Every structure is written in structure tokens, then in C-alpha cells.
Image (cartoon, rainbow, N blue to C red):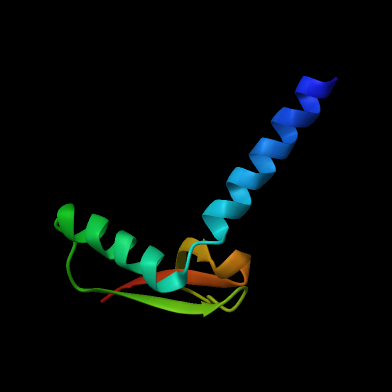
Amino acid sequence: MNRVLLAIGLSVLASSAFAGKPCEELKAEIDAKLKAKGVSNYSLEIVDKGSASDKKVVGNCDGGTKEIVYQRH
């Protein structure tokens, strides 16, 4: 039972740590990955969670309060 609780606790910490990354840092990482794959003519934008409209969400940041959205031009 203790192992199960430990596993659940660690997974919660790991997921919150990922979402807790600063937006500008995560945006730069995503931008670098896209450029490395040869993607061009796109924009990345930091928006409030839930306001992505027709754009594709590619990351969550600032404790899950913001999203990074991708739009191809």
C-alpha cells in the first residue's frame, strides 16, 4: 500500500513539475525542436488556458495556467 501511495505521489510531482516550467523557457524548447525538424512558417504563442480557439496546444506552463499554441502560416 505504501508503494502505491509513493508511486502516485511521485507521478503527481512529475506532472506538476512539467506544467510548472516557465512559459518562455518551454516556448524556446518547442521552437528549437520545430526548427531542428525543418518546420518553417509557424508561430508559437503563450495564451491563457482554455483560450486556444482554433490553434493547436503544444505545451502547458506556469503551473498549468497558460498554454503554448502552434499555428502554421
